[in-house]
Image (cartoon, rainbow, N blue to C red):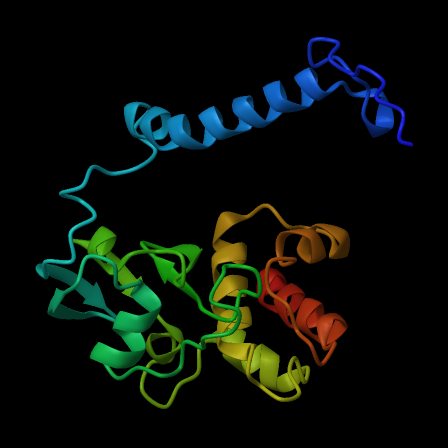
Length: 209
C-alpha cells in the first residue's frame, strides 16, 4: 500500500538542484512578465519604432547610388541589400548570411562601411551609397580592386565585393596600421576560402601608396 505521506509544506518541497517549487514558479512568472514588458520598455526607450513606423505602407526614398540619384517607392521593411539587388538590379553586393555576420553585403554609406542586409533602405534618404559597381572609374579600377587582383585576394570571389568595400572604408578610417589591426578591423568580413593573408597584403599596399 502506498505511503500517504503529507507533502503539503506550503509549496516549499525541494526540486532537483536545490530549488523549491515556490522558487521555480516565481522564476517562471518573472520571465513571463519580462517577455510581456520588454516590447513596452523598448518602445519607451526609443529602441522599437511605433506601430505606424512598422507599417508596410510603401514610402518614397531618394538616395545617391554610385553617383546617380535614385528614387524608389518601397515597403518600409525592405533592406538596402534587397533594394540594391532587386529594385536597382545591382547584383554585385552579395547576400550571404542575411544576418550581418559574414560581411558579403558590405557597402559604403557616406564613406562608412555598413552591412546592407541590416540597414533599411528608407534610412538612406539623402545619403550617398557606394557599391562595388561604383568604385571603378569606367575601365580604370579602384586601387583596392587592382590590389586584390595583384595579390590574389580572393578564390571563389563571392565575398570579394564586400571585402573590397570594407577595405576601402577601413583605409578611410585610418585606424589599421599593423597586420594585427587590419585583421581585427576586417574580422566582420568572412572569406570561407581563406584568402586572408592575401587580403591583408592588398590592403597594406593601398595604405602605403
